[in-house]
Image 1 (cartoon, protein in one colour):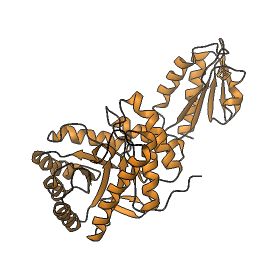
Image 2 (cartoon, protein in one colour):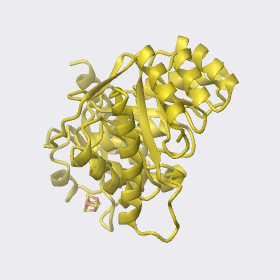
Image 3 (cartoon, helix red, strand yellow):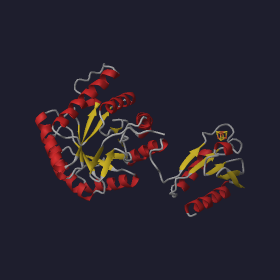
Amino acid sequence: MIKKRQTRCVRVGSVRIGGKNPIVLQSMTKTDTTDIESCLNQIRKLVAAGAGLVRIAVPTRADTEAFGKIAAKSSVPLVADIHFSPARAIEAIEAGAAKIRLNPGNIKNKQDIKRIIDCAKQHRIAIRIGVNEASIRDLKHDINTDRRVALMLREITEYVRFFERHGFENLVLSAKSADTIRTIEINRAISRRFDYPIHIGLTHAGLKEDALVPSAVAVGTLLAEGIGDTVRISIAGDPVQEIDAAKQILGVLGLYHNSKPQLVVCPTCGRCEVDVVRLAKKVRKILTKINKPIRVAVMGCVVNGPGEAADADLAICAGNKKGFLYKNGKKIAVAEEKRLLNAFCRQLEKIERP
Ligand code: SF4
């Protein structure tokens, strides 16, 4: 059982981050922010996939204007992503941001930060202090992991202490790197030093096929240690993939209660007598229509398969010409593939409508 580290609870519009609240899944819109309809469309898809917060880049004045119109129609609180420009931060807060993200690496002027703090206080919004390893000015290419982590920690600590001195503690913290080990180390260090909620994820993780494993290792390790109150899995591509990946990582750790079935498939071996991957794809397609958190197994043989799928609610063990269908470990049908799949579908109907 994972014991979540105790953090403060921070309010972001209607969403609560930290404390005893469930881990919040986030992503970013990837459409031009001034294209209001496209942004809203992407937000709708993200919310349908499970996003609790959506972040939007606002690099120009036109973007913060559009942000206000998007925020007025969004069903979830929006976070404005700020880099370099204090003016954009203030415009975004006034336009209706529930939270802004500031990067200490590129907004340094104390007077500017003070103005942002005053504006955030006035509008009662949250601020994420989000350090990116690549934005740290003192960073040299040759310095080692410990020194890089120390620099990130120093950067975030100086910022946090400045906010605290000005009476602002409605903070979420994050420190991201493209490197898995450094992301784990810096978040451990932040968690030891502060009790603010932490937003976790890698930055610049890559295309989906390259991003998933490093992200799962970094985010999964931290979550397993109880660290992380909100998660973003960075993937270059459709942002819905980010939410799907986050749900899978959380699901594996028992931190996300999915209403969809889980499909396990044996890795296949020389005992297989049928094309298990083809069969599993058929089963996966059938399961897309099911909204029950059941466990389904597709196994490649009738010898080892039944034992290995014993804890599945339904299991298909494929065999030459005939396969077996198991329900809760009990064999309930023996038939060739088409009839076996029909029997499988009937069982699913019973499970859906008991
Ligand atoms: Fe091989 Fe059968 Fe195990 Fe699949 S279930 S990996 S086919 S032994």
